[in-house]
Amino acid sequence: MSTSKADALALIRVVPDFPNPGITFKDVTPMLKDAEAFATVVEEIASYSESYDLVAGIEARGFILAAAVAGYAGKGFVPIRKSGKLPYLTHSETYGLEYGIDTLEIHQDAVLAGERVLLLDDVLATGGTLKAASKLIQRCGGTIDAVAVLLEIPGLGGKAKFNKEFPNIAVHTVFPE
Image (cartoon, rainbow, N blue to C red; front, side, top):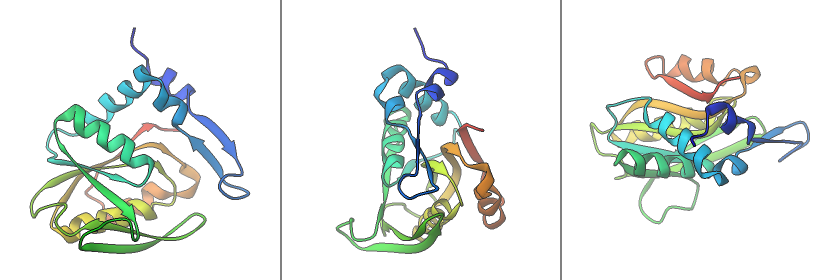
């Protein structure tokens, strides 16, 4: 028996005031624990494009999605991590998010010139994280084929902000609100 997208969405837990007061956190771990729901989401994301060479995931929950999609699609996985976590030469990009400032890094040789990347993260909020990750992939010489997120917080305008800077990149949301 397969799980529908609606069933998978129902497994996502809402946690108020995490990590800070006023933030509503969407906890995807119950959905990840359910093998059928997780497989449904992975298959959905993998179908968003047919022309990517690599799947990149943004730390931390984007890793889980990207590694699973890469395995399902038979593609390589590229981690985009928070500052100081990668052991080799990196490119870095500092960005703002809804509750602070952070820095992402990618190995300089993680994406080769001309490689097409499917970029994944769990939630699209203000768009800052996706913009920073996209800039890192481009700095390596790669092209963003498409972006995929599980959830979007429409009230923060992240998709519009991302598309203003990257108008030719499709942004797919597995569970649009």
